[in-house]
Amino acid sequence: GAGVSQTPSNKVTEKGKYVELRCDPISGHTALYWYRQSLGQGPEFLIYFQGTGAADDSGLPNDRFFAVRPEGSVSTLKIQRTERGDSAVYLCASSLSLAETQYFGPGTRLLVL
Amino acid sequence: AQSVTQLGSHVSVSEGALVLLRCNYSSSVPPYLFWYVQYPNQGLQLLLKYTSAATLVKGINGFEAEFKKSETSFHLTKPSAHMSDAAEYFCAVSDKGTGGYQKVTFGTGTKLQVIP
Image (tube, rainbow over all chains, first blue to last red; front, side, top):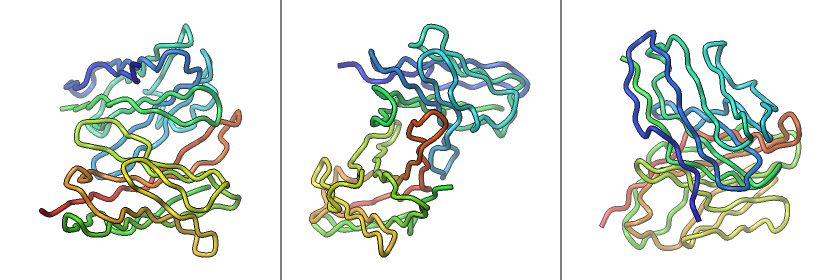
């Protein structure tokens, strides 16, 4: 079956611009997670959704970052006033339910010039 | 807070040789532990996970890991390396995040090079 998909695969933007990154979870998975992987580092947790609500957004670095999941399926990570330090690979994962294995998408590579 | 330490950011082995990737964890409660593999330009793929059942966990592609509480370790091994094993490997630990989900904390990764 189809895995987690993320679009775009690559995004280049200029400092100060707004970007949206999309995640399509595995069908039927109720839990969705966003991670950020900087060069040479492991993924770092950003936010977790159970259904439509953000159950834990403690990993979001600041208020420029926001994520939504309005219908409990597709999620969008939004970054306002991008900074060069936001450059990273943004990974999305989904799981069937709480405490189940997380399945990862291929990521979106964001480069802020 | 949970954390993991992966010893060695780069490991090189000859094809057919033993693969040993080291991971030590820090946890105040019995953890869930994972090994993920990441091939270039691909997402993370779960190799295996420990969830407090058997201490020796077998995963995909011939990998296995042993949970040793006394050493707080969860090292990944494979008896004979294949060229296709060249990738980056991440050890991870989880605890209960808000609402009871698995809040996964990853190590910094170990890049495995397999020499023909």
